[in-house]
Amino acid sequence: MNINQYIKDRSSVINKALNGFLPTPKTKPRMIHKAMRYAVFPGGKRIRPILAVAAFEACGGKDNKILPIACAVEIIHTYTLIHDDLPCMDDDDYRRGKLSCHKKFGEALALLAGDALLTLGFQLLAGSGKIDIVREVSMAIGTGGTIGGQVEDILKQKPRKKELDYIASHKTGELFGVSVKLGGMLMDADKKKIDSLCNFGKNIGLTFQLVDDLIDGDGYTKLYGIQYVKRMAALLNDRAKSDLGIFGKKADKLSAIADLILKRKI
Ligand code: GRG
Image 1 (cartoon, rainbow, N blue to C red):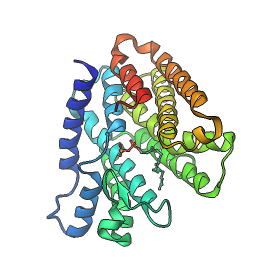
Image 2: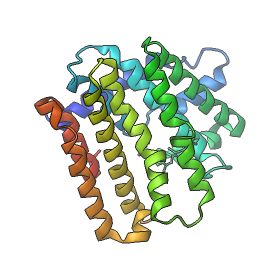
Image 3: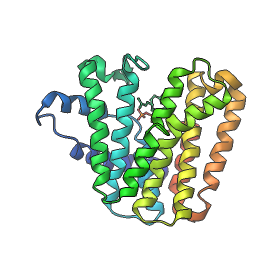
Image 4: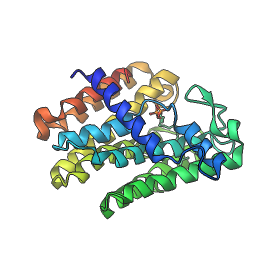
């Protein structure tokens, strides 16, 4: 199966699973469930859950038991987007091509929808029965991860290289890293494989951020210029793919996704 078909296939499975995991819009209190579903559907690229599935498969996983975990990662990612868009943060009126959650439902409901998605994410992770999985995600999105990155981003008006590295690796890299790592953890892969998956994930997370800055012309691009950022992104992509050596051909899909991220074809 070629990589585009693979992504289409796995996205469709993930979307169906997400639909089943989220409370229906008729479940009371209806408004919060409507707001949660509004933010999750139709959704974005679903990169993080696709990566979790591809990592699970690279470790020999074949069934659907990865789905609650892959969906948890997407649900938690959606919480960060809702909160990031709030007036007290980035103050964005649009997200994923439509009104942001607070513009549609008001600030209080959007805040609660974000909280509810975060909570639901952990409920799904807990279903794996693996406390390490719950711990790893907590660490990746806590003050030593996503939240830490967001705090630095808010506080630093003109970040220099060291600060930009901190922001990108925490805000973007940690969630990518843990998404990939979870696939291996669920399969009880050995430490060497799990570390390789995590390094791969963090490196493609940084590549993703660099490419994002190239498109937006801010962050790294403002500091270094287009050519330098392109070279850095290509270097990180190489480094990420070399982390996969231990998996041989089983990691072909992960490697192909890394290339799509570099070219922003996903
Ligand atoms: C509010 C706790 C908290 C954290 C916010 C992740 C984040 C931190 C903010 C989101 C805004 C942002 C520009 C983050 C950098 C990472 C990034 C480019 C996220 C967007 O991810 P995509 O492109 O989104 O995968 P889709 O919509 O495709 O899922």
